[in-house]
Image 1 (cartoon, rainbow over the protein chains, first blue to last red):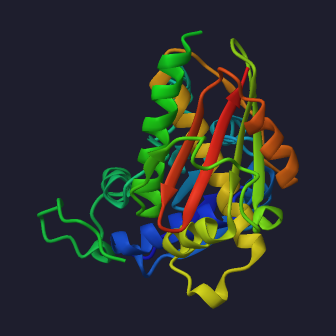
Image 2: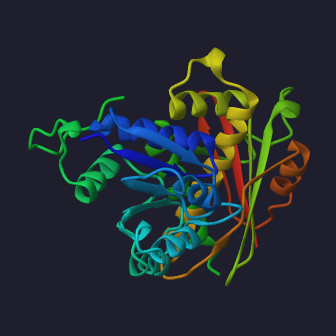
Length: 141
Length: 155
């Protein structure tokens, strides 16, 4: 199953690393889209269906919390899972994201295995993952 | 605020970020051995600052030599050395400081919510002045074979 993945982060290096990590997690055949903030993400969603959104929290124009709120307010867009990857380490903030409907929450710095495991949990095992049922191997880049 | 607790949190956060995201294992050094003004490459160093507010307010400041940032960029983005530009290195120090700040507050007290600003590049002189004026504030020197990075927090 081919998946459309949107990475939302104002940092170009971080978008590149998240994309590389997702590809190494077995989603190499996925189609990737990128946005620098929540506003660009919403603009993209007007013409493009996505299977998952991987979003930062702190971004200059529209942050990840506001993006999530907009998505959950739309009947159709609300079905797209949102994985938050952020430097924000407060348990209060994490709970706030989960209460608003985030599908997952990963704190930076992250390991590739954390992203792989969370994607599998959210998207389920697909043909793309090449999952052999072990699930605990280190990822090579 | 407990300065010792904050300093310990900063050290742990710096080590976690460098090890997990940049595949570097730093040692921690003393300022007396590595004052930021020393060396003929001071002018080419990169400075970065990140403000925070809510509960505690202030800013983190980092200063790093180009070789240190080149190694970070190479490891983080899997780029060849000749592909690395100053834009890459600016993005890296911003993201690095962002992660260190988030980790520091999480380790200091993960029940508190801090508002982190957007990291900004500043002139190296300004960053060096912040380090010189750190006083009793936590000041961490992370050293690898590529050089030393200074990070301080003003509150």
